[in-house]
Image (tube, rainbow over all chains, first blue to last red; front, top):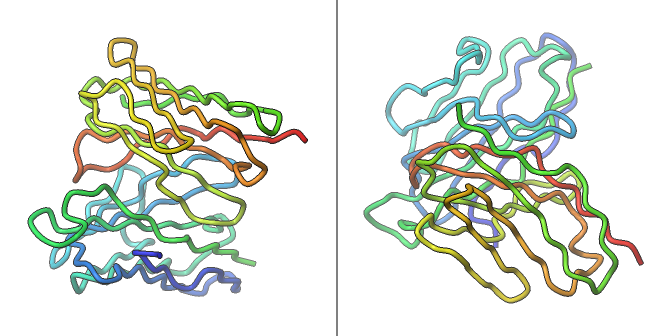
Length: 121
Length: 111
């Protein structure tokens, strides 16, 4: 079964709206979560790395004020697209990495959520 | 910089074997992955191989790694219609590191 839950799966909203996407690790603690973005027929590009209890690390070219990331607990990270515009329409996917030192996923690579398709009108 | 290249499209007859090829540039890559993405869905980790391995087999899937040439391949035996998807090759320097993805190979199954 799924080990990473992402919600919502699909969002359609008007330009100027802020949208929050949640990424939850199920039955394991994830000290690190990653947020990726995928344009149609393109590959996934890393946007930022989210570490629990600290500020996210953003990739070059990603606006931190536009894409707010909060990793407030060991099982939840959120991505908020602020004042979204049509060019922000994309498929956003998160992944979670089990704690290196403990738990059933301690030696496994990142597990991905099912993604959120964001459409801004 | 880091780069992962793979062909964009592969067409295979049902029952035949599919071979998807990939090359990467980062010699520090430790983890090499194959992910599957069905239409409108997220990523499913199919398999991964460590850079100190040459081959890994898991049921119908066989991964071959030529570290010298930085070449990775995924073979799917007895290809079925359910295998129709986009397959992403990806690499990471270590378990905690970001994953660099190729552009994906769209596998089309012919009847």
